[in-house]
Amino acid sequence: MRTNIVLDDELVEEAFKFAGNIRTKRELIRVALQEFVHNRKRKNLRDLRGKISFRENYDYKSMREGR
Image 1 (cartoon, helix red, strand yellow):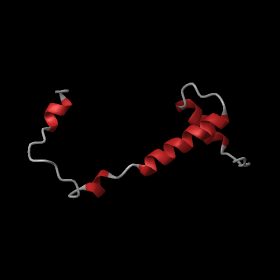
Image 2 (image 1 turned 180 degrees about the horizontal axis):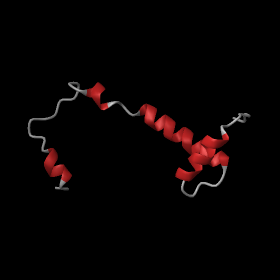
Image 3 (image 1 turned 60 degrees about the vertical axis):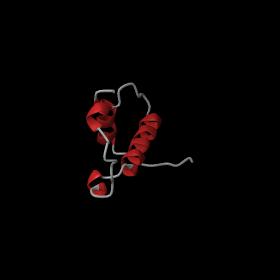
Image 4 (image 1 turned 90 degrees about the horizontal axis):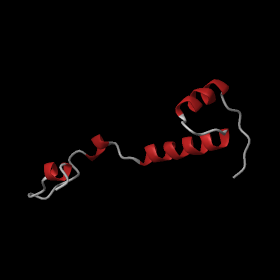
């Protein structure tokens, strides 16, 4: 979808400082939108409290160690 928008120049310059190898505003906006959507999709862990039940023999420590 093609659109024209007015961007805050200072905010764009600051975003480029964090952008690594991104060189164009178009790519910067694409990545920013992807991160925005990804963050909004992520559930707040506090919302999940009490809603997840684990098997009795679930051993999270062994999973951390790669067993």
